[in-house]
Amino acid sequence: VIKRGFSTNIALNAIKNVTVIGGGLMGSGIAQVAAQAGQNVTLVDVNADIIKKSESNIQSSLARVAKKLHNGDQKFVADTISRIKFDVDPLKNISEADLVIEAVVENMTIKHKLFKSLDEAAPTKTIFASNTSSLSIGEIASVTKRKDRFGGLHFFNPVAVMKLLEVIRIPETSDATYTAMMDWGKSLGKSCITCKDTPGFVVNRLLVPYLAEAARLLERGDANARDIDTAMKLGAGYPMGPLELADYTGLDTCLFILDGWYKKYPDNALFKCPDNLRKLVQDGKLGRKTGEGFYSYKK
Ligand code: NAI
Image (tube, rainbow, N blue to C red):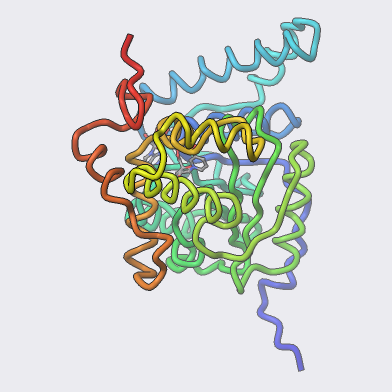
């Protein structure tokens, strides 16, 4: 006998109204691509200055898309941006939302607080998703009463350009929710892959330990930084070498992800942060954004 919870029987209609929470790098990108696909979007950030900045960033990004794909059509820009409402209140328009995507800072306590209040305010039909890179979707969902309508939608930076979307199922995610998330991702023009709720899903699970291994190779003195990067570009066909990529991503982000995973999985040596990476972060050398990481970017 298959026991069906009441919520698994809810027919989930196609997603038309989306609320994106967090108007930073990722949230603005997600709001933009959803609006480009004809969706009604509410983009929320607690910080009023950031939400203003998101609007102008989306405007300039749309202008670039218009130039490239729509013959510079300004109507495309105006129509797309008119589908996005910008706000500072996460609960505004929530009664309309078919889908809420969270893209706030990578902090479990903040995500829990947000989802708890959203869960109380959102209608039963609303699907919740997190864009987290490194935290467990199941743990984020644990504070809600809608785990069957919860999943991960993991986009890549820059969202308007990167084709991949990782769709993450937790054990409780219903088939209807999963299908709605996949269909929605495809409607945005993304190539969707499915992954279980495991650390880093597919891309970061492979990428982050690879970056750490490159740092270990350097630390042992087996090869110098330039040679490690050249080797992977010319020998493996990667567009960037691992140390360049770590600098580009931000060494603080790499450290944060590794430390989070290692704390949870101390037996997995792949998740242990190399000392050289940790030292760079301690010295404030976070990569490109501070002008120095594995390489110096100072002119
Ligand atoms: P970000 O720092 O650019 O943006 C986060 C925004 O969330 C900030 O503008 C902040 O004001 C806002 N915020 C914080 N608490 C809030 C709340 N309670 N309600 C509404 N807004 C709130 O960060 P970014 O890079 O956009 O990352 C966001 C999420 O996306 C993180 O979970 C991260 O792991 C994930 N992610 C990041 C990627 C990247 O390349 N940066 C790639 C894929 C996922």
